[in-house]
Length: 158
Image 1 (cartoon, helix red, strand yellow):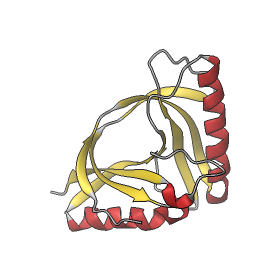
Image 2: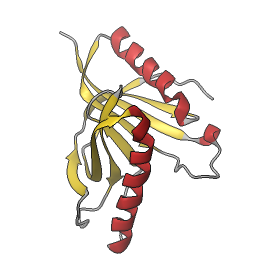
Image 3: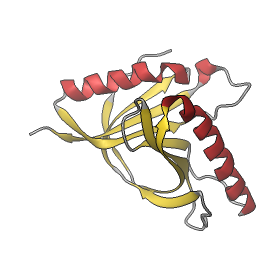
């Protein structure tokens, strides 16, 4: 695994399809992701559409004992949502970004590097933690080959 340095970037807003999970106990998050992506994939397939960007998780609150999260894909505006899938504009803005290479089990360590860098640079987190899954996971995927782009939206401290 190559250690990368976090960087301040501008993230563009995107039209996305999401499934929302509120108050998810930590032990249910993985099953929620699997179910949500499966449901979304079926809706895209029925409409003969493909995602236009990587899968993502938009954490509305920092993960803890419970998590509020929206998982989804960037989609073409032609996508017609059907419950439990909805569409929205994923916000853009200034974010601290880091690409994590390796297993999802190690994401916490990379997120901690982002948190430490935000503090060191005198930035304030204004919400939104976005994970973009650049490598599609699968049962035969080598966990060491997975790449996840971490984005934490920030403002400059006063």
